[in-house]
Image (cartoon, rainbow, N blue to C red; front, side, top):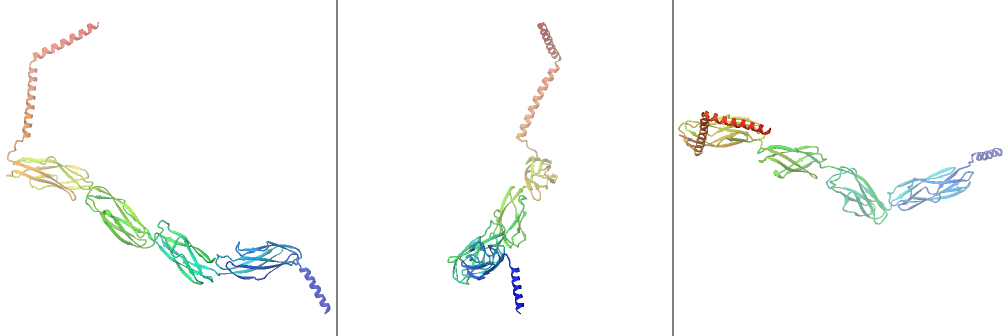
Length: 480
């Protein structure tokens, strides 16, 4: 038995010598888990022992705890074989972060490496929590609101100041007991100039009597709920005195149904129409004018949050017109005879037309009676009057030219005589003609009598020729 025991001791000593290491270490932690209030201090005690055969230098690394929260008593330590030292880790639980549990790791790094986990549970003595709704959306150019919830998760009463960026709140001061909640209404402005899309909203709740503070940023979607487009003719052709129809179309491109009002002050028009989203409806309207020219009419279409204006331009033409131009409006006729007057028929409108020419008396013949004319085209018309037997006196008659949309009436005075009277202007004309005839005859007689006296003519010609010959001879002799 003694021999066996001796062998056991020798083997144990041998194994100890074999298993001995040059570099090795052991790390111990006094309290691996600590509960600490916000703004409180958590202190962890670590003991490192160099179990190796050689001296070693160890560098200390902390992980799992936010930077700036902690301090370590040593950056590094030097341990001789079998030597131990204490290292202290001090942590301040942040006052303004939401309370939660942290798992940290401390490592001692040298020729040997050792590490330990530790836990710090932050307890909320003063804590505020904001509960926000999900998927908040609001309409552009429309005031809206939604609710958020503020809760006191701490152990003490809190006097809280609220502020918001991107919205408004009417109640910005709230007092809360422990575990008490309060609903806060957030109001959004119209923001008519903003674009459709996502926007961030920031809400801050800060206690005035403690370090409790909470800040939340969340996204809201602002959509163009009430939007529309109008379409209408930029130019409309119209005729004087005729109704012309035109349309103004409204397309609801918003995300909600809306009611629209059309206003045209010049036409005294005010119409309302409800239009569903993605739907188009048409305002049907009429326009007429008694004057030609260019007429601009302003209009507006008003929805719930938007107004759109436009201008309608009407080109008003004199499409239909006629003018019968008589060479005279007064004629004299002798019983038993007739008289014709000429006229020119002109289409003064801008469109082609067909005219009928007629008179209010029966003893007249008109050719042509029906005339088709293009715009500004004219044609000759012949009107022949022949009074019936026994008629005598003055007759006031009319010539009417008309189409479906134009008319012209010309008055013609007809005097019917048994014998046509001699008018003063006719006598003057006759006297003038007689005087002209007498003067012409006298001149002709003088010329004829002069030509008959041939002897006188021959003498005169001879004298002229002799003068010319002596003139030429004199010129040539004088030059020499």
